[in-house]
Image (cartoon, rainbow, N blue to C red; front, top):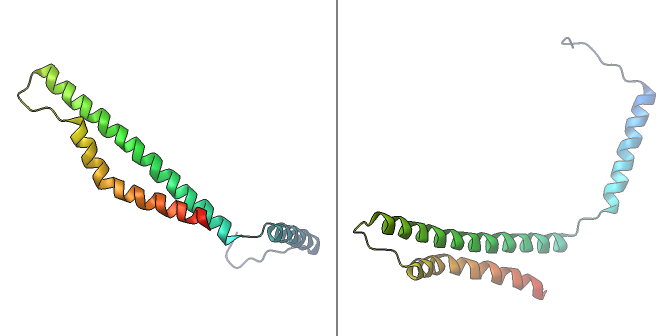
Length: 112
């Protein structure tokens, strides 16, 4: 369109658009927003994501440690092997407190 040109809207077209907006507004009023339910859903989602991520990360650490040890053993290098137990204890100690906080936050919401 050229600058300064005017668009003409027919009254019938305007009426149809207005009726569509009115229907959408009525449908939106039927689905009332419940902040407590939304908070619980969000709390649950955060807990699920964090717990799943924690265990996937722990599994990756385990696999990477095993692969590292396997590579060292196959190449007969004079590098000490990593202890899987020590690595997992370190990861659990550093991230486990956060996991406890998130799980506690989730179950705090379940009590209410």
